[in-house]
Length: 252
Image (cartoon, rainbow, N blue to C red; front, side, top):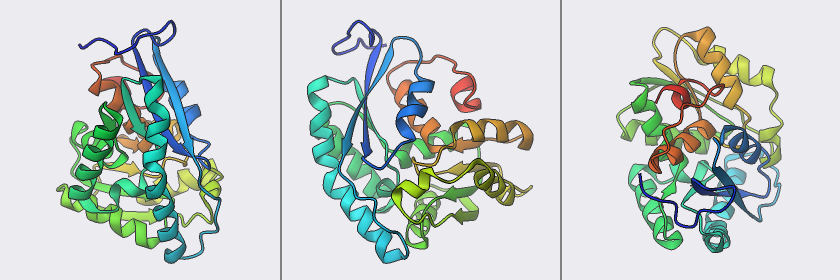
């Protein structure tokens, strides 16, 4: 295991930088709950308006705003000398397919000077880790984004059997989706023809709901924030088994 770049009193093992939009209220608390001893999270929030989302065109404008602000958010983290950076927004990482995601990861890693974890990449590796091939997908998105997500997973060799997009009416409304809505969506997605269920959209509070659903369904249910944090930890050589967030962090 490599050494931390600039270990401090609390982050004596590693410091993780986290990029989120101003409207995201789920990533930070979920990541803090997952952090093992000696790992600290440090967040850069970038400006994003809580715009109304009533159509594919609205969602496209949202993604364009996100893309325009990523570099500034990365620059805001560099002075803290993180050992790794998580991009805590998933939509843009699926947007341009597998090749686009690889190019985005390379560009942001070069800008940051450290390795970067993207939602698309983390989800792909998590699905591979649990040895799933046939998947169902839950998103908070509109159809224009759902199509990009399905396309990405298809390019990665997975068979997307079903997808439910919740069509959240604003960025903040994503976080306002209640537990009953999310649990019912998981039930609708499940079936004997599915090896695993995957949730994308980092402002959905799915980490612990997914962990509970895994037990009742008897199959992996991968929350994007769990996949992101798992990928960051394992990339840094941190192999702690972390309970209460499902088999990915506990067993892989």
